[in-house]
Image 1 (cartoon, rainbow, N blue to C red):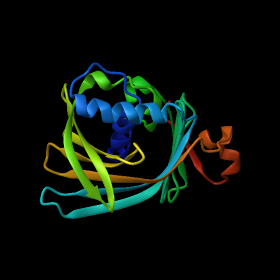
Image 2 (cartoon, one colour):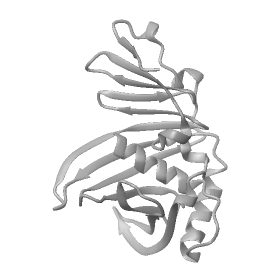
Image 3 (tube, helix red, strand yellow):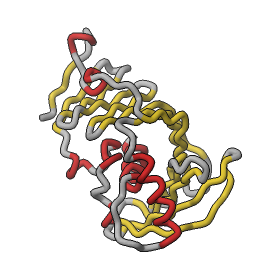
Length: 214
């Protein structure tokens, strides 16, 4: 889950980036992406996240949905939910009937999908245009992101749909040789949201143990 959130954070960061020019072609692609997403008050989408070993063999795959509005988010996967109202993070482990509650610090956390509109991490990466390819019948531009400072991964490649100017996937390459890929589909801009989408109410979930880590 942390790897998926890391990928989502980096995707979100470059969606809303405000940067000095590095690679003109990459900047043009990211400018269009940024302009489109900035018109959205919220965003909902489906995702599939896959983990591969150094030989390229698939180790695991997960799917789910995510919903974001400002600094609030909700990630739903089989057996697990992450819910954040901007100040508190709830990690709900469904099978264990346990929810872990912790303080949320957007600056310290570094893996939150709530960074969708922030653009506060762009100084940490260099970006270059890595060419075009066709994925599942869709033409995409590939943007390669290289961390400026020490990170747990070597690089990220984002796939930006040439027709819609939206990110539809990417791959994170780990220093260990493993890779983590994801696809995003069914993007719904300005999705309908309620305040209760970004909180966990124990009263509505009887029998769930609350573990307060604050």
